[in-house]
Amino acid sequence: MSQEQQLRFFATPAHDCSYLTDQKATTLFLDPDVSVDQQLSGLLADNGFRRSGSHYYHPYCEACNACTPVRVLVNAFKRSKGQRRIWNKNQDLSVHCTAPAFTRERYRLYRRYIRERHADGDMFPPSPRQFLDFLCKDDGFTRFYEFRKDERLVAVAVADLLPNGLSAIYTFFDPDESARSLGTFCVLWQIEESFSGQQNYLYLGYWIQNCSKMAYKASYIPQERYINGVWQHP
Image (cartoon, rainbow, N blue to C red; front, side, top):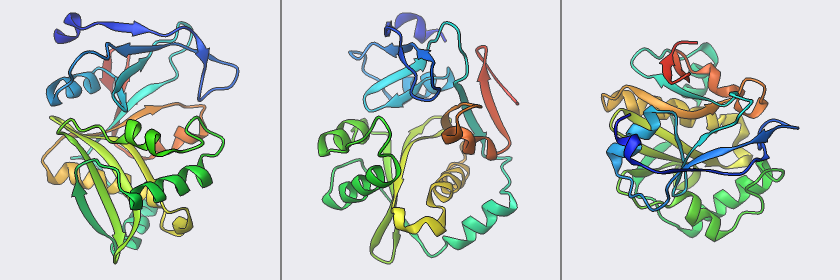
């Protein structure tokens, strides 16, 4: 991309891969001093970058290309039989869009989710500072989508509103509501929201074939994967 040529990027030293055991990873980061607006964020997403907190990054591993950016073609998306069941099961939830911000209610849900679902991951233990740094980027185009059963908060999907669609940044939900499959439902809802907004894509981040935690991303079809600098059908 032409604008990318004017930007600076920094590569990390090799470090343990978070997804594949016995693998070393190198990550390419956008210069943190760059001010990223909605257009640039969309351009970075179109070139395979991902946002985490205030950082934009791309895997830059010398001997591995397992991390594959994925985006769903929302205008052609059809729910599978199982996805239709999950969609119908959650029609009793209300959804409210709000700006990213820390509240005690959101943080309590986030803390429970990390403790019960990701106690073995890089984000444990959770903290208010981590919540703020990771999710509450006030850039004007990040959204919190709150899912409620009556008045009770059961899930929050964090997404960036980009020129070409939504970028799903993170979702956390009530671990006690496993029967609802809220993680899947939040992806389905964001696909529908992108379609309703006459956008083209839902960006899902990186799919890794040999990582069970990332396997779910392959189930949203049709989709494109960013391979060798080109978005293409798998």
